Amino acid sequence: MEYLSIFFLEVYKILFLLVPVLVSVAMIVWLDRRVWAFVQKRQGPNVVGPFGLLQSLADALKYIFKEIIIPSSSNKVIFILAPIVTMTLALIAWAVIPFSATQVLADINVGILYLFAVSSLGVYGIIMGGWASNSKYPFLGAIRSAAQMVSYEVSIGVIIINVLLCVGSLNLNDIVIAQQNMWFVIPLFPMFVIFFISALAETNRPPFDLPEAEAELVAGYQTEYSGMMYAMFWLGEYANILLMCAMGAILFLGGWMSPIDVYPFTLVPGAIWLILKILLLFILFALVKAIVPRYRYDQLMRLGWKVFLPLSLIWVVLTASYLFYFNLLPVN
Amino acid sequence: MIAHAIFFYTFSIIAVVSAIMVTASKNTVHSVFFLILDFISISCLFIMIGAEFLGMIMLIVYVGAVAVLFLFVVMMLNVAQQKNQWFAGQQSSKHIPVGLIISTLIFFEIIIVIGGWKYKPEIFDINNSISQTSISNTHSLGQILYTDYIHVFQISGMILLVAMVGAIVLTFRQRSGVKRQSYIKQISRERAEGVEVLEVQSNKGVKIDD
Image 1 (cartoon, rainbow over the protein chains, first blue to last red):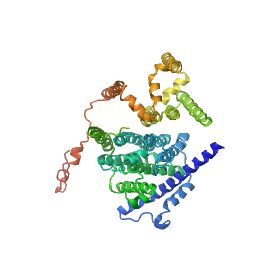
Image 2: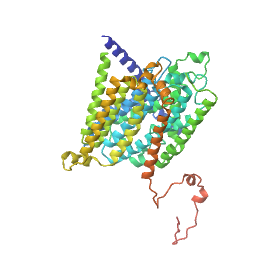
Image 3: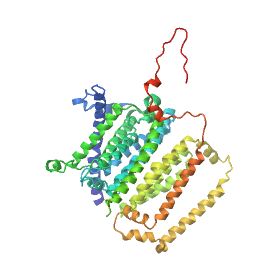
Image 4: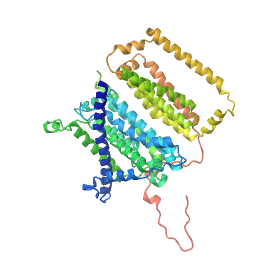
C-alpha cells in the first residue's frame, strides 16, 4: 500500500512536469515558425486560433489521422523503435531540470552528467531510423548526423568542464546557486557562444541541419516516416531543442535565479525566470535558423574539431589557472 | 528492500540476456544494439549500488561515443553476410580454440577478483577509503584519483594518447591529386578576382582557363 501511494505520487509529479513540456513543445513550434516568418516579412501561421496559437494542435491532429506506412524492406522493429527512442530520450532528460531550489523531480548529485549522457544518447534515434529504413537517403542522413553529433558533443563536454571548474559540483541546483553573484555568461562569454553554436549542431538545427538537408537528402533520416511516427521525430527534435536551451540557461544564465536580486524581482517564482530564459535562447535559435545559410559538411567538421575543440580546451586551462592562481577554486 | 530486489533482478536479467544476444543474433547491427542495451543496464546497476558517477560516465563514454562509432563501422562494413556463413558451418573456424582460451582466462580472472573481494577485503584498500567518507561519490573518486593514484591516472591517459596517435599514423595516407579546400583562400576571395566581365565576339566564344 505504501509503495502504491509513492508510485501514484511520483506518477502525478511526472505528469505535472511532462504535460507542460509537451504543450510548450507544441507552442514552441508555432513560435519558431512565427519568428522565421517575421524575419522574412511574412505572417506565418496565424489562422487557427488567436494569433495561430493552435496551429500545432491542428498539425498534430492531421498527423494522427494519417496512415503510418512501414516500408516492406525495412527492419520493422527498429523502424518503429526509432521515433519512440527519440521522443523518450528528449523527455526523460527533463527529470533533472530544476525549476526552483525545491521544484525538481530528481535532485541527483550528477545532474549535469545525466543531462549530457541523455543528450548524447539522442543520436541513436536518428541512426536507428536511418538504418532501419533500408534506403539510401535516410542512411546517408543517419551517418552524417552520427558524425556531427559525436563531434559537437566533445566540445559541449569540455564547455561543461569549464562551468564545473567554477562550481565544484555536478548538481544542477548547485550550479545555479553558484551564479548568485555573477552569471557565468559574463566570465565565460566565449564558452557561451561556443555552447550555443554546438547546441545548434547537436540538435541538428539550421545552419547545421545537414542530416535532413532537403536539397541533398530529401528529408534525411525522416524520409520513409509518415503519420504519427514522423510527428514523434519532430516533437522529439523540438523537445531536444528546448532541453538544450534549458541547459544553456542553467549553465550560463543563472537558471531559476532572478536577474537582479532586489525585492519585486525576487517575488517572481523561479520557474517563470527559467521559462523566460529558455524562451530568450529559443528565440535566438529561431533567428539563427532564419538568417544563416546552411554549412557545407567539411566546414561543419572543421568548425567542430579544429576550432571549437582547441578553443574550449585552451579556455579550460585558462579558467583552471586563473582560479588556481587567485585561490578561487571551489574546494569544500 | 523488495523494490530494490525487483529493480536489481530486472536490470541484471536484461544485462545477461542482451549479452547473450550480442553473440547469438545473426544480424551484426542487432548485435551492436544489444550491446548498447547491455551497457545501459550495466550503468543502471552501477547507479543502484551508489556509484552514480561511474554509471553516468559509462553512459557517456561507452553508449554515447564508443558504441556510436562501433555502429558506424558495423553499418559500413557488410559483416552480416560473413557471420551467417559462419553459423551455417560452411566455414570451418580456426578462431574457436583462441576464443576458448581467452574466455577461460577471463573466467578465472573474474573468479579470483570476486573471491578476493569476498574473502580478503583488506587486499582492496580503495574499498575501505571510499566507504569511510560521507561525501558524494564524485568527490571521493576525485580525491583518490588525483592524489594517491595520480601516476596510474597519467599513465592511462598516456596509453590512450599513444593509441590515438598510433591509429592516426596507421590509417593516414598521403594521396596525390586530391583537391583540398583552403578556407583562407575561400574567405578572402574578392569579387575582382572571381568575376570578369568580357566582351564576347560573335562566333568566337570565350576561352576559360582554370
